[in-house]
Image 1: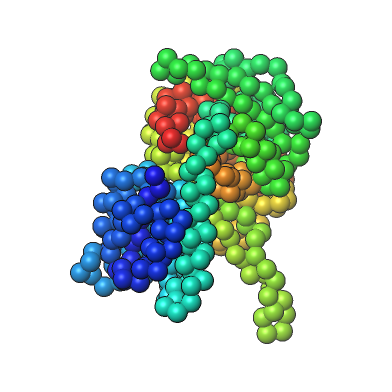
Image 2 (image 1 turned 60 degrees about the horizontal axis):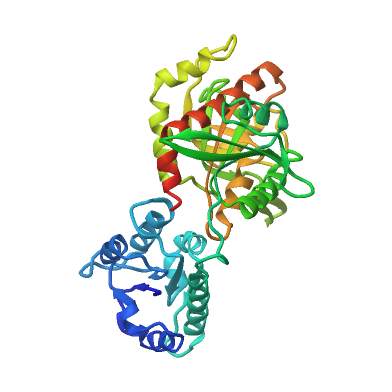
Length: 411
């Protein structure tokens, strides 16, 4: 039975929508209406709703004044956290998009669609009904026709050597490569965790870059339906913040070349418009636990012949671009987009975007890349191999210690 939650302090304006819902089989007792963000949190803790309709301008409690930050905070908790039952789809609603200001962009990004309420026009009602029909059909496809998770972990690498090569050195019972389709090969394996077999597949893209990684990631998601999809390998680091061999959890990731050319007085300039994608809080939390384990990191270093140093784990912003960087000065330009920038590479945003746009059941995506240079001309094969090694080993440690919890996050 489909459940709908409407969160809006102007509850009386939903009479027409409730009547329209009844015509498609959604009865009044299947719909809950609450006036505040705190009331919504209480409901979302107890009930699994298929559809959430959320007012952009919402009060924290019924007696408080409405503020867009209350809606945005709730939306962020649903988007990034694991405390609440997450609806299949979320619709925003507002009578005036301008009241939300800059927050409206994030609201539009994190919801399925933003409805423009009108007291006289039924367009918003019709669109909400069409969305509910889609969710109803989605809910009916339980069984063989509905895609289900198949694989536990998919690993995507940008390079066969040294990145995929180091992944395949993990003691995970790898088999010979098999065709995923007529153009792409994958390696399948598994490891034991808490008495269960954790299935793994790994592949490298045919070429470097966000487009190639995004296409491969989307292909793997569609064919294998992994619960987790991860990227490991090598990247450039920001000198002074990280060292060679350090492993970076990219949170968030974005395309540092995204934007448009605009005319400013007498000349054209490039206006940056980065779209940032973050990792799930459960992933970040467990990487933080691993980061504090100096013994595990020392073991990683000791298992590598002539390791140059003890690697560390960092969590923070990593930017993706479409070109190999050989000029350290360009990092200073990218740092202007995020002052906490840790690294720069060419693929992570493509993987995150593929996972974010995947149909249900979508995987949880994250990337662990290790620093092999500082975006300058000093690039050495031995450092690249060490970085690829530390990246793969940190991923293995994360999965072998916390994999059961991470895999449950997709249920």
